[in-house]
Length: 193
Image: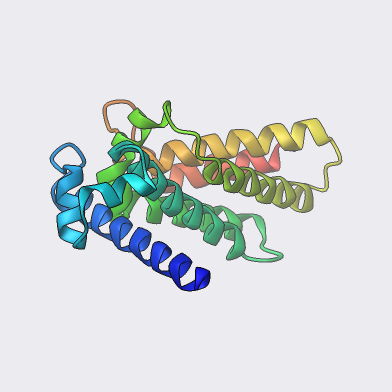
């Protein structure tokens, strides 16, 4: 009996998350009320509050799910034994895919504003895996054993790729990165080790 209730609770949560994502993307975060989400999913407002304390908590969970999954796929699908240009192209390609994704375009700014209040750790965990992937690539492609320099370079590359990924979302904050120039710069960084 407990298993059925657990499954029902999880299904309700998924339906509310799906409704929230749909409405955040179509109406916008500010224009979406909790009642809109529960009405769309076919539940009472109280049901929402059994899962989240606020609308921002739902948004942050949705953002955490999306960004974590995207980073996880980037790490898992990174080319094995890639040469430097191939890996750099892969990294830029994934950065562009993230930037172009509807969820990124419509929810990134709001998630950044709200993130100061959140405690979601899955994004951080997968961001660490991504930096570790960059570190392994740098270690293998450069042959360097300078741990400090390799880890520093991996963190710098990760920061640059993050800026590249959000350049179209926050154009007033981030200057435009030309992919070809970015590729040359990243290759120069790798070659400098």
